[in-house]
Amino acid sequence: MAKNAHVRHSGDGTAFWMLNGLYEIKASSDETDGAVTVVEMTLPEGSGPPPHTHSGTESVYVIEGTVRYHIADETFEGGPGSFFHIPAGTWERFEPTSTVRLLITYAPGGIEAFFAEAGEPAQRRELPPRSDTPPDVEALIEIAKRHGLEMRPMP
Image (tube, rainbow, N blue to C red; front, side, top):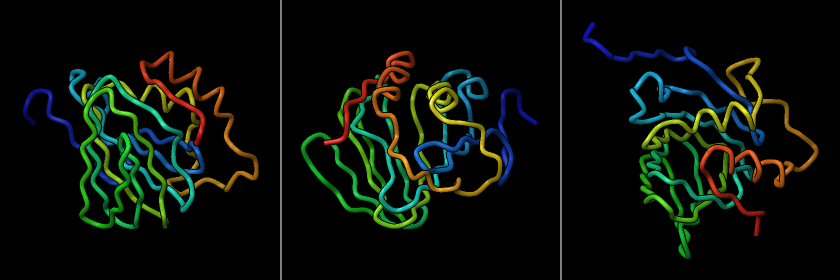
């Protein structure tokens, strides 16, 4: 195999449960020499992160399901095959309008450290048991700061 090539198959690699969703690391920052982190997210309807911004870019491809994306002051609907690119420093949030699978590329890499601290290791490659309590957004905001993200409470 070529030097520094990276191959991951379904079910391989690290996965986290966070915000009622499954976050599967397809390529970590360590595996891409810091260039990118690639994450496949499976999220149930009505979940999703609070408003946040990254110091790098975020590119999102919808594999299946539907999602509503709030990027800066605009709102966009997306379904299978939709693509969103969010420039560095742009406030955004998304909300699944059905169970959705997303493939997200963060550049540069490193956001998996945030998911590791804010989430918990996934016990299975499926959605976690749904939590009856709302997420501790204040704790997420503090964790985000430690990993170079800014986050606000939900509107």
